[in-house]
Length: 63
Image 1 (cartoon, rainbow, N blue to C red):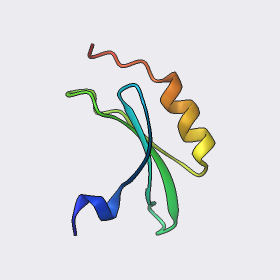
Image 2: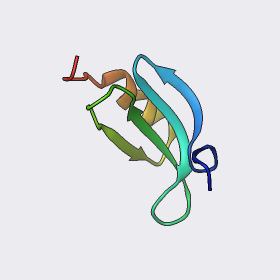
Image 3: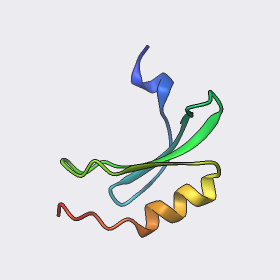
Image 4: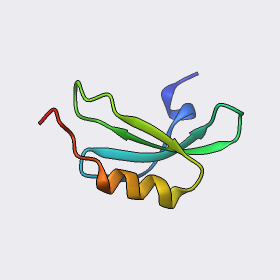
């Protein structure tokens, strides 16, 4: 299964991508993930609004 089936991109805020995926229980979850190399930050949320707030508030320490 390709990555495009696992993670569907919705929006991009700076270096953070917010998209949908299947969560741990098989339900739709919203994921915010930093695309900066060596950052490794990502989080899973139940609503897209929560994921967008997390994306806007993320301060990448790698830069």
